[in-house]
Image 1 (spheres, rainbow, N blue to C red):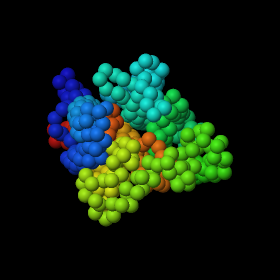
Image 2 (tube, one colour):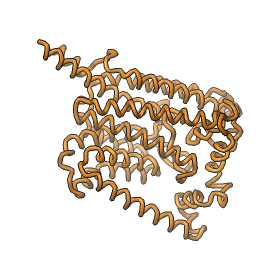
Image 3 (cartoon, rainbow, N blue to C red):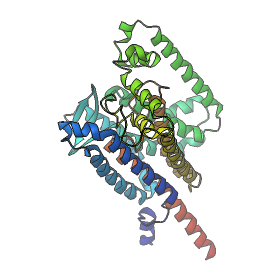
Image 4 (cartoon, one colour):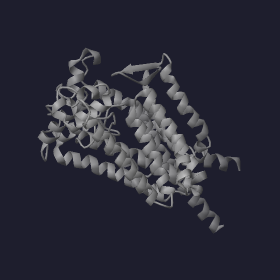
Length: 398
């Protein structure tokens, strides 16, 4: 009996490992490795800060991804019900991660304190917070989802996510991650709420508010707008040529890269914009390098890969054994979808510049590890849903 219970909690076998999901994930990661090397070899090879090693970023990304894959398999082998028992502890841990930014472990770069040094690695605190909030919101919505009917109940459910989002925004000056945390929580609630019209009203209210802010910033005096870098970013988005040597420089160079790629691109490794014109071409704007080197064809392939990845996650959510499993997978689905959409909007000039990376393509060790752990949650849901159906089938034949 004890052995049977252990098997329900820990299961490291191949059962439930969605082959389609793992195959598309493999292709995305390998594609990402190729593009990180292509986008970074010039800068890394020309800089002593990177030991003049053209493979500096690629090697680090591969190492972190290997760690992430191991973490993914570990998470996939643990029953997600057990993980969610510690959702409250995970929520408190979010405050702990933010608090680390006030300690000597904190690292400031580009005038923002978003990272902490943990041993030999740097971790952006927003990354573990995202997965912890998915687990917490999934647990909360599973317990309270049936009671979400009024506007007040909707607001109450969103308060915990709102608190963490505000902390991430104000303490680490990371509005993009705050928006993703809040957006992920809102989408998860949208799935369980019976009255979708309320979300349409909420989106309209947010849209009107954003439009009012943009209009206000556009009518401001440039000197007044310069006092806030976010206001200046909005003005640079509205009139990029006014800021072409400043805030809009990266956005314009990214658009030049996209436009010069054409249908088939200039060829892998032949990007011009990565030669110092885009400051960090292997990071937020790596999609522009993909467009320049591989053209519309390569960009379309990237988008199709993400669509198939999200499709497989959605299918697993629909076959989950219970509401908790469905909420976990929907949380991962919405996080990845939001991040991909925001990154593509920024790179194509349809949204002001933010620090949103392209999952599995942009360089970033901690982001890759925690994204892969989220995929591990999805695999755990699939694994134990299949296990339950098999157990029920065996019992039916006894």
